[in-house]
Length: 78
Image (cartoon, rainbow, N blue to C red; front, side, top):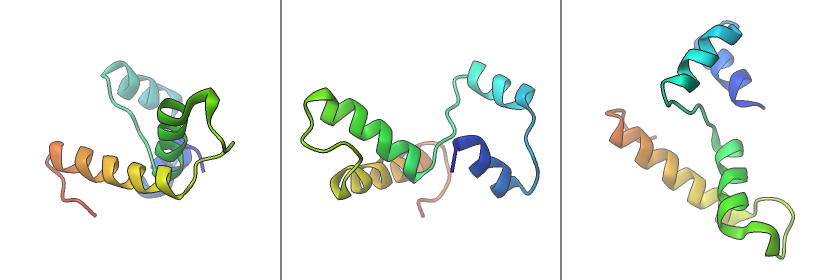
């Protein structure tokens, strides 16, 4: 699921490209566990990784980062 699809599903309607553009211009990043796991893998494992896709450790780190972002933004951690 893409970030936009996750946002659309959570909000219950299709988000237009203009809304996504404004969020991104404002420095916002819309993420879910899959996209954050891929980001963790890309940044911390890099091109020298011994695995091609995010592994369990990447997913654990992604969940921890998302929880921290939620708390720092004033939302309860899940």
